Image (tube, rainbow, N blue to C red; front, side):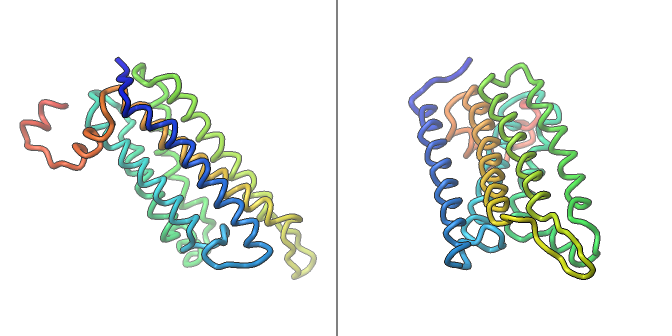
Length: 224
């Protein structure tokens, strides 16, 4: 049964606020291409946008943790917790880029196992009959946004070689800004999808804070 308390109405203003932040960061990223400001560059690490993306993913991991601890028989959905946790840290510390620089192996190779585990968790959430239709649409929207962002990244980073000359794709900045904005929108939709699923079981805040509490063996056994 869906709990439609006043607390659940927070999701609408929250989604609008998150979209607004993403739009502002995207606009600032465009401004940065004209008047470079290090902390606003969407194409660099250690920036405001990277921190915001990391927070979105960390929040998605937290909400999915609460969901797994609240629901019974969640199947492989629990995989989304370590996947989003790793991706949040990777967004901030650039693990896969550092591995590529250290080994010379394309960063996609290092991300492939994470993506595969995330796909398993994604389909577990989609197939669960307790997942509301709104959450399914948000999950699909998040996956689509992430997929298109990777296509934009490939186009933006494509190069033409003439001898030893390396030329970036035309209008690289626009491809890059679009890619980063879509990534943030995708992460936002995954977060909102988890919140929609969690609110089915009751008020959000008690469940979120309860997920951080260590349980006794008897409590853990009764919830399995």
